Amino acid sequence: MSLWNSIPTAWREGLSSCKTEIEEIDGLLAQSEASGNLAPAREHIFAALAVAPTEVSVVILGQDPYPTPGHAIGLAFAVPLDTHPIPGSLRNIFNEVQSDTGRKSTADCSLESWVNQGVLLLNTSLTTEQGVRAAHADWPWQSVVDALLRHLVAVNPDVVAVLWGNQAKQFAGLFGITIESAHPSPLSANRGFLGSKPFSKVNEVLAATQKPVISW
Image (tube, rainbow, N blue to C red):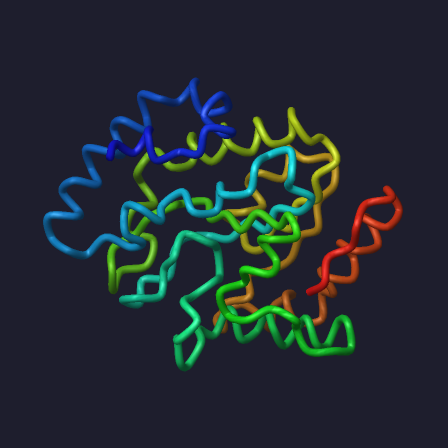
């Protein structure tokens, strides 16, 4: 299947302006797949877009997929259920949920329960190479993600954007409501992520606009 055809229908309108970039990425993917090192697998690249733009209440914007083999599933920060140990970023996220809300996260490491509540878990680069962080940072993913987010805000202007890390913060200007901090990676979590209370802040915004809060 071509990369374009793997995009859920509800999002295609918003990506029509960057179809050329998607076709370019498709060609680059073929080379990566030939080496057997693509992360995530092609069928999971747009997994985050299973949530229709009209159903998104919160977008959590990360950086790039996990490079560890078997970890990347197309959802920012999520990993397969049988992953042990879980990555440091996700461990810090769960620790912050407990610190922020006073209780353990209701989600498992797949973060499926967050997705089911309308949380869009999107990276700023949707692919990488196994064993190499940010390997595809110079691919035109930023144009694609920019188009996705512009479409999301056009359809759903009250969406709350949670921006973790400098890559994510580059998109702050697209949103009316942002909650920003350092990235939850073990390399940066102590520089502003831990203690930032993003989860209660999101729910305060949602409650103020009469939207269902998220069970984190």
